[in-house]
Image (cartoon, rainbow, N blue to C red; front, side):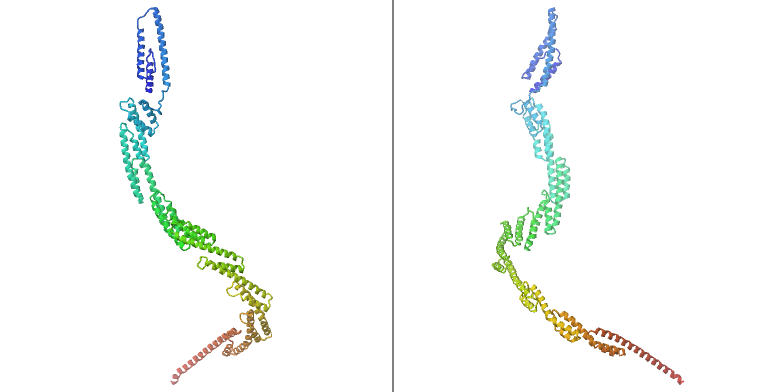
Length: 639
């Protein structure tokens, strides 16, 4: 109402500027209609004043007064126009009082409420536009502000429809429909809104149906059929479906293809059926996008491969390949059905691997590993049995540790005490084998100490180097029997001493033989040297001299025979020469020389025989020819 009053006063001031000679009286009243009435009354009074000016002239005094009246009139008009201008300027320059929309009373005038609704709707926010629409719905058609409100409602309806379209573009069909339904049927845009909602709902049903078919084909890896659904979606005249959702479906198909390729590559690795093949297979399958259909199949494959790895783990464990069992079990990923059991296998295998060190701390660590196996685990019973075994091993190891500490003094009495401690471990105890092994070792150590003493005594006896001392050393060293620790070392010394003894015993014999040989008595020398038996220290030297002497004897014996054979051959008696030389037997010194001569004589004899045969054949041929000639000449004599 204040705005109407302001507009009315300004329009009135403009009209009065065109009406020269009228007096303007402006009064601020609370009611615009009353103000207008007052103005009309003042205007009527002013119109009467000029009418009196049309009366006939009066007396000079009255005429003078009349002139002054005219001056006063014009001054009044001038001042009135100036005042009007000042008032108009003041009214134009002064902002009308603002409506307090924050504390608006329900009983406030409709114009004020409409003004507040318009101000709120200018923000473009959904809540303010809806409230403005509700206010318009509450107005009756005969309300003075209804025409203006109807005009504003059209603008607000467009704003609401724009917000609804934004919701549609964002994929919020329900939100868009809810906003569009806020537009009343009295709005000029109501038919357009209804058509838009129908279009949205139709596009939505079609888009959802296409998407459903697309996902179904995608789940079965039917890439061509999925591409057809993408093409169908692109033909929808809807920004949300043919742009945003279309891009999503294209990305989804790309993700599914990539995921399927990853799974196929993983399956190729897994065909090796070894930990080295399952490791990259599980890694690749684990990288499959969780938002794809392939992910469920990848999980199933990972579970299957994990079960195979668990079997491999058990096989390695049975073969006591504990490190390989741990490696295989560690390849099983956490989010699998057999992961907990795999962890139990790791603890069990680690327990055995650590216990192999056979140390006190190792058995304690092995027991700690077994306690980490879950009570509900299939391996729990085996873990209990193994833990009891490690406890027995721990007790035996403590017993052996004490025995080994005593044995570390390296004294026969210490070894004897250590042996008694180790013998306390019963036959069926897990440490029995180790105890027996150590007992054998310590007994060997005791024997070695004893042998060392005996060998030292033997060396001491052999120090003088006399025949008697060496024989005593050999006798003492021979007490170290076969199988004792220092047997080989003792036999080495005994061999040296025995060689020295034999040398002392046989040297006089060999020297005697050499002396006889120098005197030319080779037969006596050979007989003397032959007394040195095989295997003795000087046997090789004696045999060398003996061989030389025998050669000299054989040459002396066989040279006359060979000379006689040569003489026979020189006289042409080759056969006799051969027979004579054949008396030199194999192995004697002149055997090869005799055989060479025999071969030469045999060749000469063969040549002589051939010549004789040829001569005989020639003689026979001559005789045959002569006889034939005589036979042919006898008939001629008859004639």
